[in-house]
Image (tube, rainbow, N blue to C red; front, side):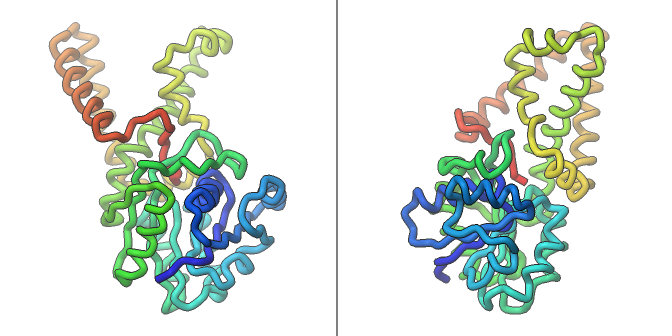
Amino acid sequence: MKIEKVALIGLGLIASSIFWAIKRSGQNIQVTGTARSAATRDTARKIGLCDAVVDTAQDAVAGADLVILCVPVGAMAAVAQDIAPHLKPGAIVSDVGSTKRSVIDAVAPQLPDGVHFVPAHPLAGTEHSGPESGFAELFDNRWCLLTPEDQPQAAVDALAAFWRSLGANVDLMEPDHHDRVLAVTSHVPHLIAYTMVGVADDLHRVTDSEVINYSAAGFRDFTRIAASDPVMWRDVFLANKDASLEILGRFTEELFALQRAIRTGDGDHLHDYFTRTRSIRRGIIEAGQDTDAPNFGRNAS
């Protein structure tokens, strides 16, 4: 299956980065984009994002070999229903959502026979959003997980090749397993970051200027992801509720154990715990998934 025309539905960070990565790759692919907001479409036209920016998703998908839904996961069902009658037979529909089971349940029933739905999740992003935030290098050496269910191998292979051409590494994963893994590696960490900012705000004995002026690198780096798109993360947690609650419960148990060790002066427990987790962290670095390029999951939605 050859991909010669791509439609991007939604023109935020991930969609804009997809476009710039396509252009960097030198592939002869025509990219048409659209966004719900007229202001976003105007911005995209102003900065030369996409070969054509159209006003409706129906117009964007006309004749497209690959349609990528780059909208919050809560909006995907409505978008899929809107574009379904206008999809080219044999087209591949994909997404960039940070949850997969909910997206499959929302999108797959809307699509006509002969259209192939291959969900995807590029594990790349920054705390920034909007069409002006994208850049071609976003996906370089990052994983893009594909979670197809009963789809032709040719469609899966074509999408995998597309993402590799953008600089990504590609792997296949079962949708429910994906959601559990991402609850650990992305979703709950974002929730904790948002919570830590809320704690700092609630400590009225600490002034705003002190939080800003005296933030140690740990606070700044850890809470940077709390600047991410609130609509996206609201939808992520509602869509991946079970896995998020499971991992959040495990986190709470670990936190209580550390709290007890601090209260009772159990230095051995703290030292052993920090030693073990430092080793895990070093393993992540050695795996090449911690570089200067930010990787905060929109991504992932």
